[in-house]
Image 1 (cartoon, rainbow, N blue to C red):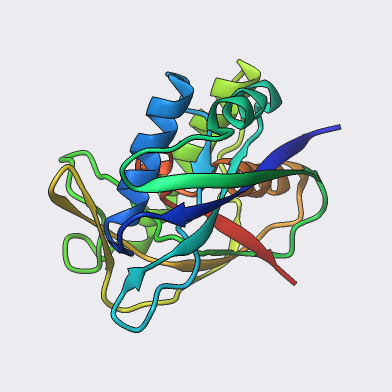
Image 2: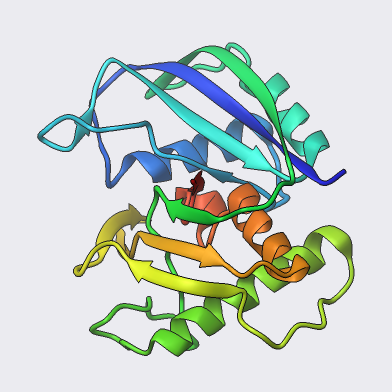
Length: 221
């Protein structure tokens, strides 16, 4: 049965981190701790930031992948991990089996790079069909990465799409701004659409999943 594993990582923060910068620091920690080159995972931010936008003292983040062996490697490498920003206290693992998905909501912004390496925004593009096209291509590429076969699917997996913010959220990566939107999606009921929605949950919507947790999403309903 298709499933993904989720790690919940509890940690102490050694210094305050702004919500725009924390994802990049988490992403770098994961690459250093695991010494892992495979890009088959996504992670959340540290929860809800304080009113000034900073995380302080303690936090949690979630790490997901369809590759259960990869997650096991992360669990071992993150145990007792400590650096200048974090001291990990404990890790909990849970298994999420494939099931019908009515709707998903991105907790981290969805970042989509267009052909000219500019992020899709209402200002830079505004073309919703282009947004869906890039989003769908990325999910189908992820399917091919995991299952080593191509999907024969020309339709959109999305039945309903709603952008939850008018102005893009900004995360920082390598000193540069990344622009993205939080979205609500109702996938279609057919098998392939449901599979693509499940891949979105396990590995994130859009780009920068491993770098800043782009498109980390949860099920609604």
